[in-house]
Amino acid sequence: MSESAPSPQTPTRRRLLPGGGPGWVLLVSLLAVLLVGGVALVTRYGVNTAPGLLFIEARASGLKLGRYGRLKIEGLHGDLWRDFTVRRLTISDEKGVWLDADNVVLTWRYHELLFRRFHADRLAAGRVRILRRPTLTPKTTSRNLPVSVRIDKARMVVETLPAFSYRPGLFDVVGSLDIVRKGPVHVRLGAGSRLHAGDRIGLAIDSGKGAPLVVIADAEEVEGGAIAGSLGLAADKPFLLKVRAG
Image (cartoon, rainbow, N blue to C red):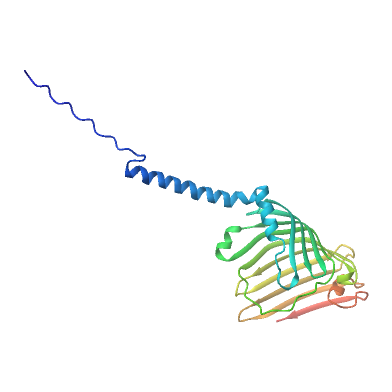
């Protein structure tokens, strides 16, 4: 009798799920990727949900702004990481609200915070009302800014009440700001009156560590007005200001 040849053994298939080492590694790696991705998505988009925006709104309200009072915001909408709107923003001191702004829009680059820099492409507001002069708290030791601040373009309508400027004022204001942490400062500001054609103010300030302070200012009010009043000067007389300082 001839013996039949032994059949070749079928190679054992390596299991990729529990029971085999490579399976556990693959599974843990997959879970880690999903977890990191989920956290990133929640961080990126979770705050833009209605509950997330309400949470941020509640946390921001009551924030102390140095000597100027406390912040309150209402009606936060949009993408908090790129372009968002605040329906109403107020700053209050011990006597109540002294600055009231509506429809504040901010377009900014959140990723630059990684480099300790706040960078806004655009800051706008429907109207900013300055109701009176704030009651400043006692001055404390000044500290360096925690981040650099850059605003490429700011545009808003500013209304000043007699309690602040002795005469009512209404101005179209444009400007830019660049403050480098422990570095130079550049400010540009222009305002034109809506109530009195020709009344205006222009301001440029440049300073930096080891560099001289440079100030250029031009302002004119033919019959006086809110600009002079806001500086504590007579608001009922012609006002002309020209400054070239270095």
